[in-house]
Length: 299
Image 1 (cartoon, helix red, strand yellow):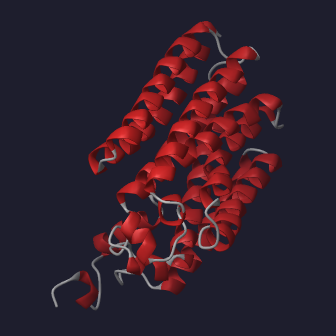
Image 2 (cartoon, one colour; image 1 turned 90 degrees about the vertical axis):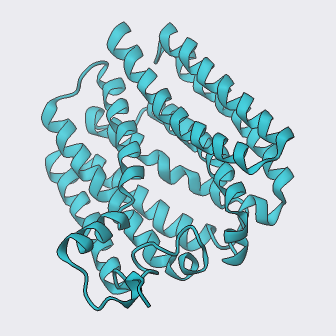
C-alpha cells in the first residue's frame, strides 16, 4: 500500500504540514480578516498596532485549536466521507491523542495571550467562542439535528466579537449587528457545500439540510436566507455604523448572492451549487473589505 497510511514516520515538513492542516488555516485567515475589519470599525480607524498583533495571534490560536478539537471529535465521521478522509487524523498522519492535546494547548494559549496582552474580556469571548464551536456545534448539534448549522453558525461569528472587545473592552449593539451578518451568512454558505457533498453527509449520518429535508427544500432555504442576509447587512448602516459606500457595495454583493441562489433553485445543478458556494465565500471577504473601506474613507 503506497498511501500515506503505510508510512511509519513522517518527515518534519510532513508533520508540520499535517498539524497546519489540522488548524484549517485558510478558514482561520478568513475569520481573522473579519476580526481585523471589526477592530477598524470599532476604532473608527486603525487600531493600536500592538493590540492588533496580539489579538490576531490569540485569535489564530483560538480558531486553530478549535478546529483541531473539531477534527478530533469528528474523526470517525471524517473517515467515512470522501471530502474529509484525507484529513490528518483519518489519514493516520496525526494520532487522535496528539490532535486532542494540540487543540487544547492552542485554545489555552489563546486565552492566556488575549487575557494578559489584550484584555480579559477578549480572552473570555474567544474561549466562549471555542466552547460554542466544539461543544454546542460539534458535540451536540452537528450529528443530532437538521438545525445544526442554523444554531451552530454562530461559532464563526465570534471573531467579530473578539475584535470589538479588543478595541472597546466591551460588547455593544453594533458588535452584535456584525455578529448577525455572519450568523445569517453561514446557512446558505454551508448548505451550498452540503448540496455538493450530500452523499458524504448521508454516508456519515450527518443530518445536514439536503439529507434530512431534501435538496429542493435546501435550495429554497438558501434563497430565503440569502434574502434575509441582504436585508440584515443593511441594518448597521441604518444605525449609522456605515455610510453610503457600504450601502451601495453591500447591496450589490447581496443582490449577487440572491441572484446566484435563485439560479440554483431553478437550475438544480452541481456546477451551480459549487459556483454559489464559491461566491458566498468571496461574498463574506468582500463584504468585510467594504466595511473597512467605508470606515477608512468616510470615518
